[in-house]
Image (cartoon, rainbow, N blue to C red; front, side):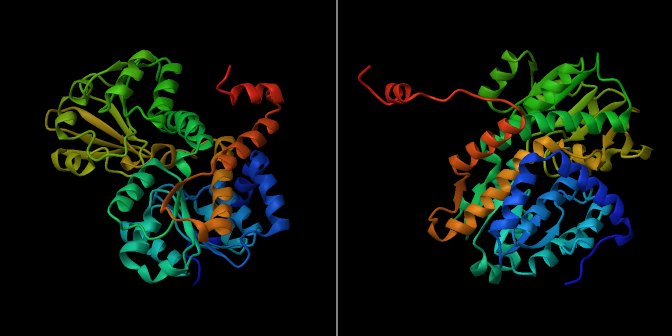
Length: 415
């Protein structure tokens, strides 16, 4: 099938972005060299749905260097960069994605990507896996397995698995230590505030920031807000995470109390309607809201549009909504992922680790997929440690190694 992109003439700009990423992704560059020689994906079709920007594009090129036939789409209508999509097509990959796709166009791009009949799926949020199971079950016999990038996608997979609906193995890439400890915390923390700052051009210091959710992404978002000089409030449903937030130096309260206090709000929960009509009603005039969870449902945009008496584009990627009480509330990136809808996503060095985990997990599926009995599996420990070991080397760091006597001591119960 022919690619579906905005404009192939944008390819030159996309190539420059991908080249910059390549220069700053030591792990992926090494894997590209290895895969070019060993061709672990020879004869395999890989369908990928990940935020289509330069770092994802380089992952696609690494897999293609390993012999994969790549079929690529985005995982969010506002995160696709059209010049990057054009560059991939210019390099011979099939791409179905463009920035600002409607819901129907987005679904069509997912469907057309899958029509190629994947052997391996690389997903970000679960849209490929969901469509295969709900609309295209005839593809399942040829699917070896897949890899899931995000917390939200894993939540969907776990629900499917619990219901007995998941029909092929999926690797929980997000659960790997070299993914969530760095990507979710440091990647999200930096890229969320990059997106907010470049979009609003407002100071954070001295403001009150409300972070909804204190998982790894919430931890990073709160940490960076504190570093920028904000007073941070965390909202949570988990008492253990709430205690952790308190001991990390943050205030904790329910959203219905925090709503009246915040200047900036960032949702990072993976849940629905975390900020709703009751919360909007008590917010300050000029409150700024954004979302860093995968789907655009954490802020109740439908409810906000319904109660607003006026809406207006205030600045690129900022829509203002005037409430009946007179105050204005500002939404960044239409409530979609602020770090990608309003920025370039996570730093290249962070995604170098995450995408190395993706590439090596896909390789593991090709080599061991027929042996797997569970439908949800973790990234093998040896893969996680291999990525960490390589990354440390590129960072110019060394660590200690146990002596034989120390290994004996640690493995003995007779001390």
